[in-house]
Image (tube, rainbow, N blue to C red; front, top):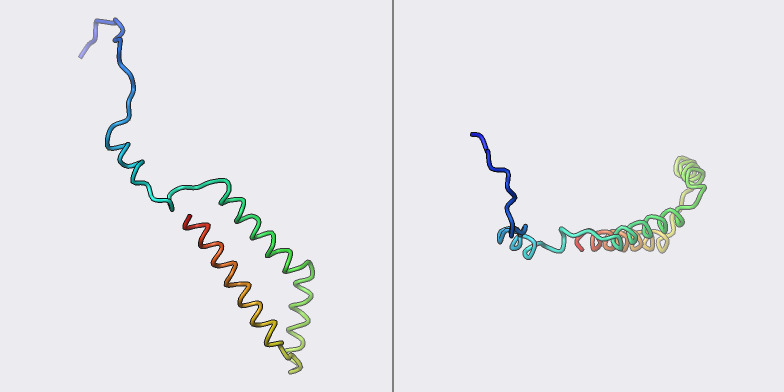
Length: 99
């Protein structure tokens, strides 16, 4: 097929199809991403790193020695607080992901 007429077509405006508009209107909140969500995740990660401290490897080595020697006596309250902190972080991360 050969086109011989090169005149421009006037009065044509691009529009979104109704299907595209419906898809946008039906978009679930979980499909949206914002910089605020990313910022919250970064803040949570930085807080977790700060709690871990810089000598984590040293602390783990010390714990390993205590466990092997049979002298390790974990604090029930520290264990419970660690579990609660981990659950809070998990919950916050899931709420960010869910939107």
